[in-house]
Amino acid sequence: MRCLITGGAGFIGSHLADHLLALGHEVVVLDDLSTGSLSNLDGRVRFVYGSVCDSDVVDSCMAGVDAIYHLAAAVGVFTILRKTLSSLHTNLHGTQTMLEAARRYEVPILVTSTSEVYGKNTADRLSEDDDRIIGSPLVNRWSYAEAKALDETLTHLYAQEYGVSGVIVRLFNTVGPRQSPNYGMVIPRFVEQALANEPITVFGDGQQVRSFIHVLDVVPALVALMNDRGAHGTVYNLGNSEEISIADLAQRVIAATGSRSTVIKVPYDEAYGPGYEDMLRRIPDCSRARERIGFRPRYSLDDIIASLIADRARTSAFANTVQVG
Ligand code: UDP
Image (cartoon, rainbow, N blue to C red; front, side, top):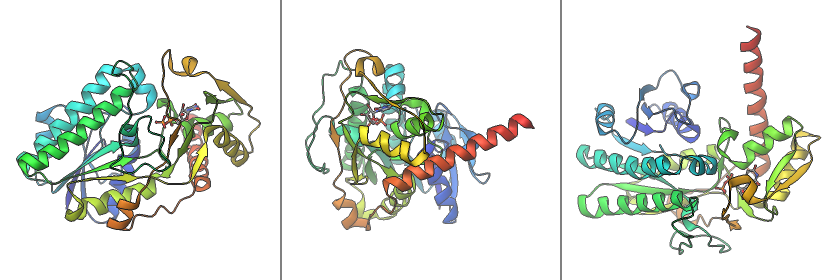
């Protein structure tokens, strides 16, 4: 198969590209390199530079494509808060452009959504049919959840009205090598701070709870859902149910790195600006994906932290080599 991955130079997209290449598929990557990097890409990938909002560029990628994995998006809380309007535009119009391409070329599409759509729902385990509890449309953080929720609705309506074969995945906090600490994601930030023996910045009181899934558990599930046409027409949570508070996560990272870092509590207003609203708890129920494709994460939180530490060591060794060279 020839697969198009939008956002394929990014963190999750590049791991998906590696996985599809290993399965013997051809891979075309469309990416504007806003947060992705060419250094993430295997040399066998055909790379196209451009935006998912540009239908001419999208057209130029579509020849012979059998499947679209739409991962391109503005991601990370810092990105959303710094560039709220352009992020909203990319996350809405990019998906609509890709759904149009899926319709015109009659190609199946996987659309990546987010656990953020559940908003402030603190249910013990969030399942796909649960209600969304979202704050005011004027609180910038929610613009990401709003855009992704509309992307889901668009995917649903393109299936209903145009017969596009689409499947939606809601990714819970996904972590792994190549993930940058620059866009706010907590584990890459804590690992970087710990390795530098700098203070670990816990935002709020640290009692908020998350669960983290390794990117290498997510990627095969994306492919399995794409390839299972019976799975299309609905939405799947993909995440891990091992839960931890952010305060405990800081201690876990300090222990794993042997760091001399202290932990400091940073008020939300200081971390993100005034009026920020966080989710207190976000844990998935993944029984739908488990029943459909046998989804079962293999990597624990300790594995995830260890893989990030190894990745930081590898990239700083590389940076030193380049500097010396
Ligand atoms: N967080 C933190 N310190 C940081 C970065 C994030 O305490 O340096 C917190 C953040 O406020 C949130 C949690 O860690 O409660 C997860 O943040 P992330 O941005 O990784 O993902 P989110 O679940 O918010 O989408």
